[in-house]
Length: 159
Image (cartoon, rainbow, N blue to C red; front, side, top):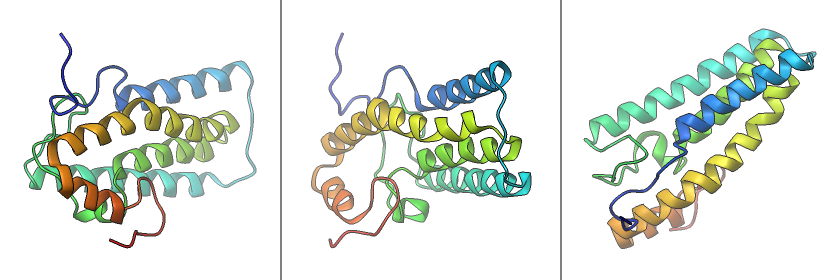
Protein backbone atom coordinates (compact mmCIF):
# COMPACT_ATOMS: atom_id res chain seq x y z
CA UNK A 1 0.00 0.00 0.00
CA UNK A 2 1.54 3.31 -1.08
CA UNK A 3 1.17 6.38 1.05
CA UNK A 4 1.32 9.98 -0.07
CA UNK A 5 4.22 12.22 0.94
CA UNK A 6 1.83 13.95 3.35
CA UNK A 7 1.26 10.71 5.25
CA UNK A 8 4.81 9.62 5.91
CA UNK A 9 8.15 11.08 4.86
CA UNK A 10 10.55 8.16 5.08
CA UNK A 11 10.85 4.45 4.88
CA UNK A 12 14.13 2.64 5.27
CA UNK A 13 16.89 3.63 5.66
CA UNK A 14 16.10 5.93 8.53
CA UNK A 15 18.65 8.66 9.10
CA UNK A 16 19.78 7.09 12.41
CA UNK A 17 20.55 3.92 10.44
CA UNK A 18 22.74 5.95 8.07
CA UNK A 19 24.56 7.45 11.07
CA UNK A 20 25.15 4.10 12.77
CA UNK A 21 26.03 2.37 9.49
CA UNK A 22 28.59 5.05 8.72
CA UNK A 23 30.16 4.77 12.16
CA UNK A 24 30.30 0.98 11.80
CA UNK A 25 31.83 1.24 8.30
CA UNK A 26 34.44 3.72 9.50
CA UNK A 27 35.43 1.59 12.48
CA UNK A 28 35.59 -1.50 10.26
CA UNK A 29 37.74 0.25 7.64
CA UNK A 30 39.98 1.61 10.39
CA UNK A 31 40.48 -1.92 11.74
CA UNK A 32 41.33 -3.24 8.26
CA UNK A 33 43.54 -0.34 7.17
CA UNK A 34 44.55 1.87 10.09
CA UNK A 35 45.07 5.58 9.52
CA UNK A 36 46.05 8.54 11.65
CA UNK A 37 45.38 12.24 11.72
CA UNK A 38 47.81 14.83 13.06
CA UNK A 39 45.02 16.62 14.94
CA UNK A 40 44.66 16.63 18.73
CA UNK A 41 41.88 14.36 19.99
CA UNK A 42 40.52 17.30 21.99
CA UNK A 43 39.53 19.01 18.74
CA UNK A 44 37.44 15.98 17.77
CA UNK A 45 35.93 15.71 21.23
CA UNK A 46 34.93 19.39 21.08
CA UNK A 47 33.25 18.78 17.72
CA UNK A 48 31.46 15.71 19.11
CA UNK A 49 30.23 17.78 22.08
CA UNK A 50 29.02 20.57 19.77
CA UNK A 51 27.29 18.05 17.47
CA UNK A 52 25.52 16.39 20.38
CA UNK A 53 24.47 19.79 21.72
CA UNK A 54 22.91 20.70 18.36
CA UNK A 55 21.14 17.33 18.17
CA UNK A 56 19.74 17.65 21.70
CA UNK A 57 18.74 21.29 21.12
CA UNK A 58 16.83 20.28 17.98
CA UNK A 59 15.12 17.35 19.70
CA UNK A 60 14.10 19.49 22.69
CA UNK A 61 12.79 22.17 20.32
CA UNK A 62 10.69 19.56 18.49
CA UNK A 63 9.41 18.11 21.78
CA UNK A 64 8.41 21.56 23.01
CA UNK A 65 6.56 22.13 19.73
CA UNK A 66 4.77 18.81 20.33
CA UNK A 67 5.72 17.44 16.94
CA UNK A 68 6.93 14.03 15.91
CA UNK A 69 10.67 13.43 15.73
CA UNK A 70 10.60 9.95 14.19
CA UNK A 71 11.65 10.17 10.52
CA UNK A 72 9.12 7.58 9.35
CA UNK A 73 6.08 9.33 10.83
CA UNK A 74 4.22 12.42 9.70
CA UNK A 75 5.20 15.81 11.08
CA UNK A 76 2.55 17.34 13.33
CA UNK A 77 3.87 20.89 13.18
CA UNK A 78 6.36 22.90 11.17
CA UNK A 79 9.17 23.87 13.55
CA UNK A 80 11.14 26.98 12.56
CA UNK A 81 12.57 28.13 15.89
CA UNK A 82 15.67 27.18 17.85
CA UNK A 83 18.27 25.48 15.66
CA UNK A 84 15.67 25.24 12.88
CA UNK A 85 16.07 29.01 12.51
CA UNK A 86 19.62 28.40 11.20
CA UNK A 87 19.18 25.11 9.33
CA UNK A 88 16.21 23.14 8.03
CA UNK A 89 18.09 19.98 9.09
CA UNK A 90 20.01 20.69 12.30
CA UNK A 91 19.86 17.06 13.45
CA UNK A 92 21.45 15.89 10.21
CA UNK A 93 24.07 18.66 10.44
CA UNK A 94 24.76 17.42 13.95
CA UNK A 95 25.01 13.82 12.75
CA UNK A 96 27.57 14.68 10.07
CA UNK A 97 29.56 16.73 12.58
CA UNK A 98 29.36 13.84 15.05
CA UNK A 99 30.92 11.45 12.52
CA UNK A 100 33.65 13.95 11.65
CA UNK A 101 34.29 14.66 15.32
CA UNK A 102 34.59 10.95 16.10
CA UNK A 103 37.05 10.63 13.22
CA UNK A 104 39.20 13.47 14.52
CA UNK A 105 38.96 12.27 18.13
CA UNK A 106 40.25 8.78 17.28
CA UNK A 107 42.54 9.91 14.45
CA UNK A 108 40.59 8.08 11.73
CA UNK A 109 40.84 9.36 8.18
CA UNK A 110 38.13 6.84 7.29
CA UNK A 111 35.53 8.32 9.63
CA UNK A 112 36.44 11.86 8.64
CA UNK A 113 36.13 10.95 4.94
CA UNK A 114 32.82 9.17 5.49
CA UNK A 115 31.17 12.20 7.15
CA UNK A 116 30.36 13.95 3.84
CA UNK A 117 29.34 10.60 2.33
CA UNK A 118 26.85 10.13 5.16
CA UNK A 119 25.58 13.70 4.70
CA UNK A 120 25.06 13.05 0.97
CA UNK A 121 23.28 9.74 1.67
CA UNK A 122 21.07 11.47 4.24
CA UNK A 123 20.31 14.20 1.72
CA UNK A 124 19.34 11.76 -1.04
CA UNK A 125 17.56 9.18 1.12
CA UNK A 126 15.90 11.34 3.78
CA UNK A 127 16.04 15.11 3.31
CA UNK A 128 14.49 15.17 -0.16
CA UNK A 129 11.67 12.86 0.97
CA UNK A 130 11.10 14.88 4.12
CA UNK A 131 10.94 18.11 2.13
CA UNK A 132 8.26 16.64 -0.14
CA UNK A 133 6.38 15.55 2.99
CA UNK A 134 6.62 19.00 4.60
CA UNK A 135 5.57 20.73 1.38
CA UNK A 136 2.53 18.46 1.10
CA UNK A 137 1.58 18.97 4.76
CA UNK A 138 2.32 22.66 5.27
CA UNK A 139 2.10 24.23 1.80
CA UNK A 140 3.03 27.90 1.65
CA UNK A 141 4.28 27.97 5.25
CA UNK A 142 6.87 25.34 4.29
CA UNK A 143 7.72 27.13 1.04
CA UNK A 144 8.35 30.42 2.86
CA UNK A 145 10.49 28.66 5.47
CA UNK A 146 12.46 26.80 2.79
CA UNK A 147 13.12 30.06 0.94
CA UNK A 148 14.43 31.78 4.06
CA UNK A 149 16.39 29.01 5.80
CA UNK A 150 19.33 27.04 4.40
CA UNK A 151 18.88 23.30 3.96
CA UNK A 152 22.16 22.55 5.74
CA UNK A 153 24.18 25.58 6.80
CA UNK A 154 24.92 28.88 5.19
CA UNK A 155 23.46 32.34 4.79
CA UNK A 156 19.77 32.81 5.40
CA UNK A 157 17.55 33.55 2.42
CA UNK A 158 15.78 36.77 1.50
CA UNK A 159 12.22 35.85 2.45
